[in-house]
Length: 348
Image (cartoon, rainbow, N blue to C red; front, side):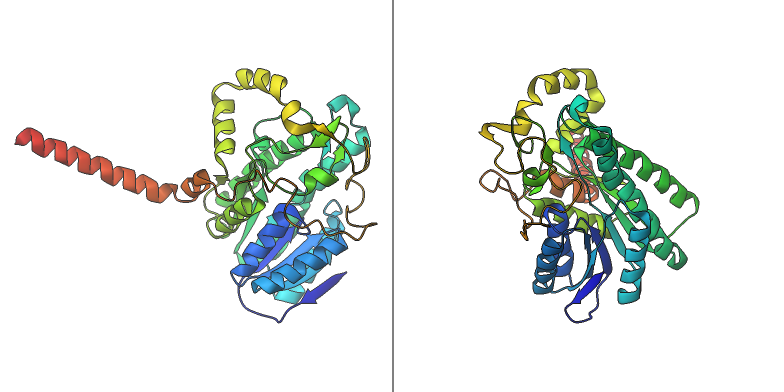
């Protein structure tokens, strides 16, 4: 079931689900660059093997575990395998997901259920498995990888949006319980923007054009840096990554009805390359919903998608989010300084 790579080392013991590609892949490598030991959980064996090589080259120790996060017993067994190999689990990142790009009426009940089981219940099962190992030690961090879509639903992604909304509510409930118990275990959530990941080439698609992220598009390493930071600063309940995430969540809080109408006009075209018809999988193809995208083809998709030309590698808003306490103190000090200066001028 699992495969160990690299020499045993120090650092934290980290689990990343959905680690074979995209954000999970970039996050696993980012943890490895810090010297952490990383357990890579996903279904795709080719992607897992390549990710393990990247983790090792980055300086980490890798443990490969092929698992479907929708299978609670399999997730429990994977967590036990990680604990047996690494001795304990310090950080668990719930990142695995599935999706369907289609109007709600074109998604079958089985497809909707599968997205919910992988994305939402996979997070629940991963969290439960992590707590089983963290609570007895009274320490550990669980990072839920969310999205701006955890607060703001958009057209053509009803199953994914519903799952991310569910994760948001679940995480808030769990966080309250941990705080009530004065637990040393922390949970936090990182809300992400549109990212340049391979998901848009393997997701089940029933749109005329090929799926794409809503602009602006960020590189997966932007998300990875935020997730690694959140794992070390999990007393903070939530992190927003990307200016588009912040703008969306603020607009939704202030004028959700206006945003409904705006997305009704723009949300269909902004999520597909209409001029670029599907060339992989075809309309209605299964994508990676039921089996790994790299399974029959032996292909490693990597962390990046096909949007490198437009994706940005940095987010000033992400820096602001990670350093808001420092900025607040700076603004407070600046304000006090200005007040003192003004007072001296009046007295003069």
